[in-house]
Length: 449
Image (cartoon, rainbow, N blue to C red):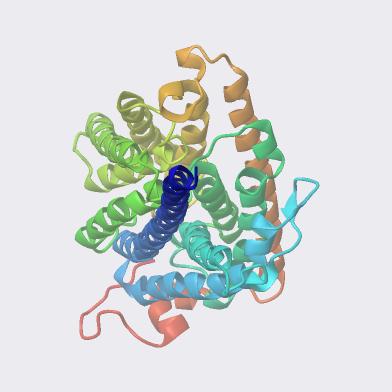
């Protein structure tokens, strides 16, 4: 019996040992897979953040190219400072307002100064990566306003604006939609920020342009609009290509997961919408003005990009083309309407590109969304009207908050530090008046009334 039992005991011991080793091996492999996935997600999120940061250069080039040479230094300074000032404000207050514990679904109430990010834990390290991705989005919302207020705004006033939009105005909207706020609870879809980022910038730009008034000489006594051409369209075109490139990080990076293979679909829908926007804006301008206007085609590409940002993960490639095409058409008519009918002076078309097309893109999710792409069907694909109504509520609510808050902010700035430069400074150019230097030293720059 003993001789029979011992071999069985030995085999049993060997079997248990092998199972233990295999189990430990599987556990180690699973932990390794999870660790690698987290590392991939972190690297992807940071690379996407760096791409979005590069969009600051794109905005700077677009705004400089579409405005006059005598204000180029001022444009660069505003794009530099809205990110620099905004990053500190977002670190101190904005991130907590946006992603802190929700107070009544309206704003976050903790996590200020990145206090929730523990550098000694993996989750804490992820919080740093997530903050980096979010701060470049906050900077994008802030810098949109620069173009609409170009050529006549005090730099001191713009610095104050950058603080409050990055600390409060933008983060409140972000909390509503991305931070478990009341619009998120309603099921609003704004994947990468047609409304959260672009409409916030566009509606704040509208308030700023109204409070400032038009540039000297922009409108004649009979109310007709006078074109004030930008000084460097090639520079503006470079800016648009930089923005188009950065937008792949903007939209696909919003997965915050390199292991999420939908980044491929998002890249495709983003690209197709931009292309359709550029083509349609070109043809509409060609029909309206008799020539394929380069500046309108450039803004058409941006309009397509802004429009697809909300639904880039929820629509098909064909749906993306439709959304971008309508965005490209809208931007031409919107620029004309805002300038010639409303008499609001927006040198770069920021209100139309980001505000109007951001609203359109957000509404379009309720029409073109398909379950196969993002789990939801829009009205055109049998999903009913409920999602569209939710999108409408979101668009209107954000407009009311941002436009009202920005109007109040610019009103306070105007009554205190002042909002607009003097007539003499505007005629000479803000480079000399505000910064005491020239962007193109040695070149003769003509100033006109």
